[in-house]
Length: 190
Figure 1 (spheres, rainbow, N blue to C red):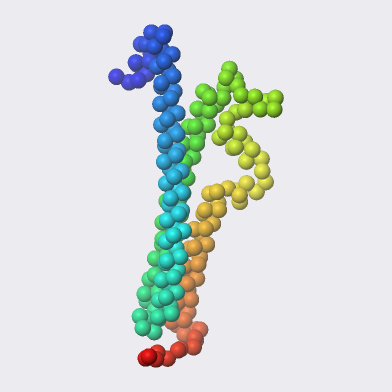
Figure 2: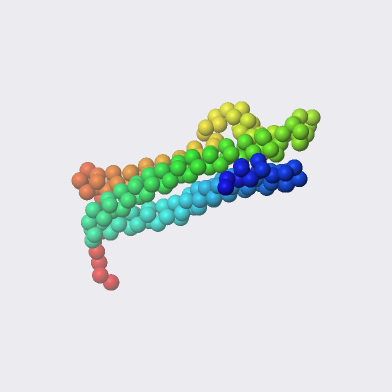
């Protein structure tokens, strides 16, 4: 039996309690959804930040040892780094979409249940509309908002990493093709 049927059949004393429990469940589900995806997004970015220097280091090591291993491993590693940046960027975009859904649900709960006119919270003579609602309104008034948003900054990190791996790949190809000649250190035995 759906919960709405149970709530509609409840007698007056239980009706208020049932409605309150239902609203708590709504809030809890919305909060958990938002929290899960927000944490997942942060962890994803942390993994990228930890993994990227190792990929760069591997590319530089392969470039340094290009006479022993050839150019192909370094080119493959650079392509893998570019692919890694694209995958992390796509996962971040998807997590951002899911976070937006959670924020929208929490803003609705704020506006319709927590910070309504009959349960108002005053702030300097005006009614406080809730944390998420206030943050959205105030941040939309700021200039260059798109450049200051967390999503833009995280996306910029992924894009810069993609470009850096692409530059490494291009450098590998240019050196291999002979457009740039580098001094060769002779390999000496100790």
